[in-house]
Length: 220
Image (cartoon, rainbow, N blue to C red; front, side, top):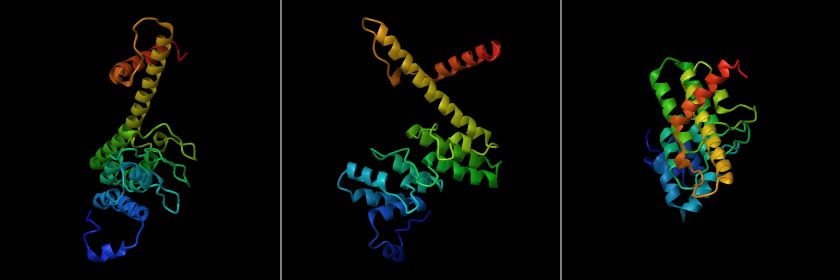
């Protein structure tokens, strides 16, 4: 995507624009240079984070939503790198998180070419980046839908990816809760639970064992 600030007529177009308006433009155009200009104009990281987290369109979408609705990977990557950036702002109309917004974009692309491997790879990388940065795949919008439920049912690969992320997060919570209970009843030098103790692979295997046991017991 060409830099919209590289042409004199476009520079004139942005003269007098507020920092918030420039942020929205940067998000919509995938323009990381413009984003950097706005952030560099802030007096501190905290001021920049406040601007990034509070800027909204007239329809109530945040900067993150505007980028996610267009699948603008580079600008999303840059936003997520900023200290203090909020990963789960809620849009006013749909009650969507940016993860919902990204799914809406992916659904449109997928419906046009469901067998396109490049689209599937892009979708996987985008959603993985967003979840790893802190986007919560369990949050529901105003229609009571999670991002998983919003995914095109034909896109089985993406649905499984999001479900795996939910399972890992759930198991991490179960693990920490179990360790906390253990720490309360055991005396001595037992340390408290921490995220660094969590092994996703180990807990995936444990989940498989639990599921198998439930099936053998008739789903009880």
